[in-house]
Image (tube, rainbow, N blue to C red; front, side):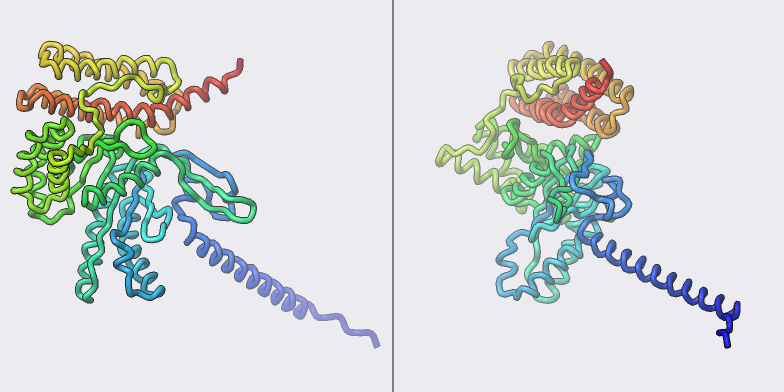
Length: 458
């Protein structure tokens, strides 16, 4: 007898079962992929992928790269080796992970993300700029204080850190080979930020920022920021201005530093002029009012070393003038021509200040003010016409210069200061800004403009 054909109901049930099984297999595969991507995402920051324009890590390929202007922040645990003495490997890793767990939420809360863990250090990126980086760094110090309080209750040693930052244009992308990729950040801003962090050990403070980061704020810094030094950072020809941010210092020390800030900055200027007899009394006055002020203590040690041994730790550049250097050339004719005129005006101002030429000072101030506005107008017009991607960041640096220049002019016209201090102040405000801006931000703009010219049909 022939086999009976399956009923329609049997066929439908079989198809339904197959469909359900297939859906379940797809669900499991999707969950596995999501878990895999989530696991991989713990090694590659989500924000990094976003900046690369990728939705999923599977879309990332070797050589993917993008340029961004951002603030790079390095955080390093002080005296890590003594802290870990006596710890087992497991205890050491638990300590480091607890430390990172205390600080990383503050980085993300302020618009940043951790790019790398480098042993006992953190490298973080703040894409929206220096204001976020400063707020994030100060929040990290607050979190560290709470972390330290918990350790103290457990009878453990406190933890100190050094935080350094710099703002600039960097390249973010992937490096490696066909078998292994790694995301990384390349550029001068990374190197300078790392060097600034190392300087926190020298000045014995938790938080330092480069002049580049301060000028990227778009406004003059507040009362809780003070100029600390001009230093030659490895890999840079022109000295970098370094600033201390002491908002998170203990209340008494914070108030004392704010009160003595003008005296301290004047003393630094006299030290750089090697006028130790003028610098020491000012530093001693600062120490009397702020006994816990470590940079003041360091400068007093330097003054004594100079008197005893002739040892001087400064850049040696105090006349406020800087000759045109090849590194200042950005490679775009109209901008280079105006840069030469601006630098010339800044140098003439320093010379007029040095010689007490009051009428010359006023004339040059007026010229520099007007010419800077003309130069900024040229640059900003070019950026708008050609759709320059970093126009907002560039304009922010221009606004910051205008504010700093206004404050410099007020100091010059106040009559409160001696000429050597004003020459040094002009060097910090004008020459250092010019060197950072021309060799970084403006050079990138010039390269962008040249690329447009090269793309035009002949």
